[in-house]
Length: 134
Length: 495
Image 1 (tube, rainbow over the protein chains, first blue to last red):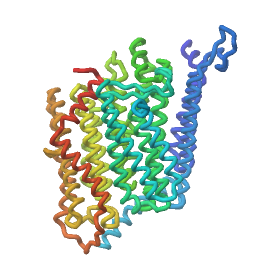
Image 2 (image 1 turned 30 degrees about the horizontal axis):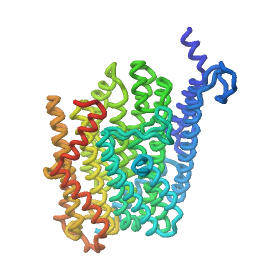
Image 3 (image 1 turned 180 degrees about the vertical axis):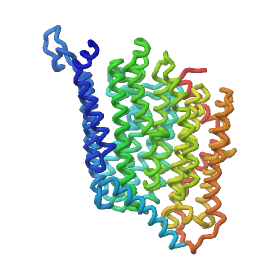
Image 4 (image 1 turned 90 degrees about the horizontal axis):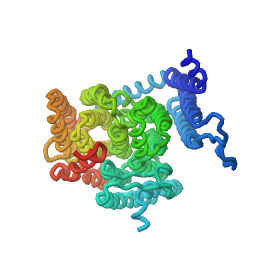
């Protein structure tokens, strides 16, 4: 019972795991390229929450010097790391969305199944063109 | 002195700043000029760095004067000093190659921006090969991934499937990088530090720890995605076959190699293995996976018609050889892995360059059909291509032979005959796909008269620079093999 209790007490990590699995599931299962990127951001956000949870010291305040000698501070380092990771995540999403725009222009679709079919068709066409030329 | 003291930082900072400058330049030629001068500067600094490190063995550079473990440190030791030199060397040659080839594949108005992203990729690869900070590595990993993806997507001007390849790489690469960050989080929770050297010390104090082991597993999984190790390689063939050829040769030569170097550092350099978990991972995961990779890559390449995709698949097999050498888990195994890391970078860079020159010559994608009889029309490129191909098989007097020699030496020390068979059979199989190309290009008549453009001089020069290096390393192998020894010494201690 006590181990279950300690798991429940760390409910923030349960949230992390749920978000992580939800994000990965969306990436794997969804056909739509934009929704896949949404899944990716959810997946990345779960890691952000994981880091932020790591840095929290129970009873700790923001790490700004208060002048009181026995103040407990939260660990600022994981929080700063996550600022960097958020920026990286934004860049990844921006590039991904830009690619989706280009894919839509080139293929007129952003559904994975249709794109796969088009991709295979491209390959066949290429071979046929060569056979005709030969 | 100011320059000499700050080489590790400058190797990243100079291409990074130059990339910002290049992106606003109006003309493609000036942009290329700036990029070329930048990579030359980096090559000079990388040479200076090897001299400094050979004198003092380990160089630790603290950014902004913040001493490690508090600040971010760049660490250059025996394991990565020649990797830095390799990155610098290949980036100079690939930049020379890009001048005459990239304009055939990318719209002229996009070229300055393409060179900007090109420099960004080079800067991040320098960062990846030097950083001694686990989180800083993630940042460089993402810069390298995003710039590689942009460069791959530039192949869309020729073939729209490049966009899908780039998108796939983005999704898979981002999952891999995020896995790596989760791992760093666990390791930070266990040790309270991000500096790799400091992590070793702390882990020594606290012993094997569940959180640290989990963290290492996540980090390995993430890095394996970037390195293109077999089960998580799926982004690699499409990405390399649809990217512009200069990009293919740059990325296949050094981008995966840098990730493999870090994989070795994670496997051997960080974790004090009290419970033999790494030994078990090497024996029961990495070794079978490498053997499958060697055979899968080689056999898939035999049945491939598209030449660029063929060499991308053969890259998977070659990465398999490197990880196989690591998984032997001895001093000579690790040095064999590092020797092949250098040699394969040169060989595969040369092969992709040659294929790119052929494709420009015939004005379409290089396939088994379109290349018929091209060898006789483009003799200079073809000769270089054949030598690089022979090196890939492991023919004596080429660098590939030295790789195989050290690999066999490492295997004989283990006394396990099955491994010898694996390498021998797979080398024989790789003869098949290379012979198929040689035959088509040299012995078969073109089915229609070819309109071959003249071989671009600068591209041939860069190809032959790599080919000469391959031959020199095949005859005079002391430099590369001593790098292998030094790398193994730096990672698992002097034997």
